[in-house]
Length: 157
Image (cartoon, rainbow, N blue to C red):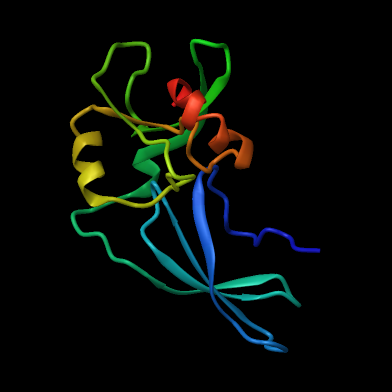
């Protein structure tokens, strides 16, 4: 049974296997998120330990704790809940209005996976809330999600 490695503590992230050999005691994993630059880990399944091998440096005093990224849900016209990724500065007063930059793509079963972006930090530091709507037609919610956003159902995407 696979268990998620300890240390993958963010709600929204992307991880993938870079290298795994038969009978090898280690699996090399890549990890990134909206808040974490690309990291490469060695994962040791027998001891369930994770060893950080490298992390892409970010200049300018970047601190991951200064930002928040989380999943929310927005109702569509037909009542279906659409997953959205929300990213903003942690010190932003959400009781006040702020500009929003919203991105959405839903075609070809392509998922908009979490990934780190320095240009996104620039807009977040200006008080903008960045939102990615994972609309139907993409692959985030499985095959049915994709099928419900194409051809005769394209109006859903």
